[in-house]
Image (cartoon, rainbow, N blue to C red; front, side, top):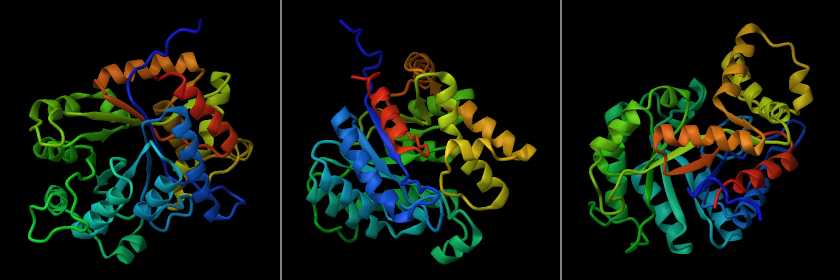
Length: 329
């Protein structure tokens, strides 16, 4: 008899519809949908998609449209946004989109919101958003919820008795906003692991709300499982290189094959970014990943794990998703 899986937490996926070198960018979208179908079969709890504008390496610019496509091909798994960036949208429009999604797929839609601006100055100009003060985020979330919950000056249609839960993609001030509004948070990054104090303060300051009576923390991180630790590290390199390239060239590129990345002559700065990305990920054999995940979950008292894993080879990615699911029940 095989041992029980080590984790009883919900396990979810954030998929950013990463494009691949040498492939039509549009191919990333049906690949995202197929990954969601597999994730549902593996028992994943949520499948979220992202919002990035005019980024060569990411095909997902409209979460609501992609959520509709994913939800239409699945039957059980929750589907949502990780996240809708509120600087880019009027709260009423977001409320209407997600009320419609909830009406079409009752009880399966999540609304994750964030405050990131466009990646480059031309993108920010195209979106008409040059700045977004910290106080605007809390104000926009409150307005969004009022439209959904029929408490605003107008009501988002269709008007529903049950509205999608709102999650805050949070760092710094975002954690304070989530605590004030009584909302769950999605957190990640080495800074919070090094200093879990902000998450602890979120829990202490949390004000219960009707939809979220207790604080809830979703831990988002890069996870890669392979037969050996060395192979798992290699599979992280395409994403690590894309991050390094974005910080030195200003463009976040499509994923490249592992061997193409390994053949690159990196600058000292690029090498540092690659190494930092890998160091922040959880990778190795299933046993390696189980041990490191447990440490990180316990450090932040996380209530759920969300893997944002990607790599060039989709078959390797599918195997990693299946291996990760095997650690949870």
